[in-house]
Amino acid sequence: MSTSTAGPATRPATGRAAATSPAPSAAPTPDTGAHTPEAAGLIADARRRIDDLDGRIIGLVQERMAVSAVIQRERITSGGRRVNLSREMEILAHYRDQLGKPGTALAMTLLELSRGQI
Image 1 (cartoon, rainbow, N blue to C red):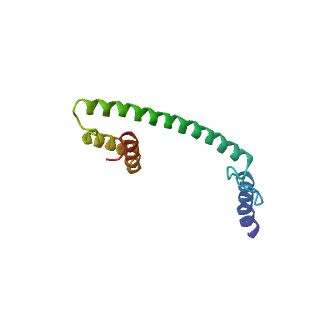
Image 2: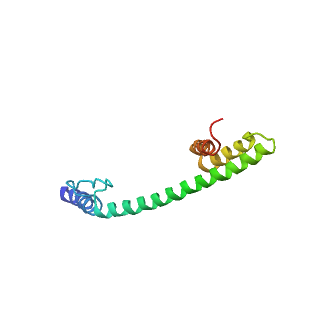
Image 3: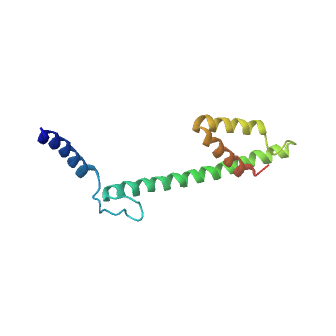
């Protein structure tokens, strides 16, 4: 009775550990923190994608800032105020609706970059 209980309990654990867990002595690679070459490769590829996305996001933010400057200039030239608070509230709500509470902070940062602090 003790052999049937110990055998099945031991065998799957050993098989799973060997297939999915790194060897206890495997040290993480310094640049990725991964414990296997496969994981390090996946992480490196994903980081390249993130770097590309970040570059595109920065470019879009810079484009947004330029468009906002045109709007502000035209609004002021026509006798209006530099900032349209109701429009900013719409933007804040849109980002919050799409991204949750952190979206509001992101929108505030974008608005600050685009018009400066008020």
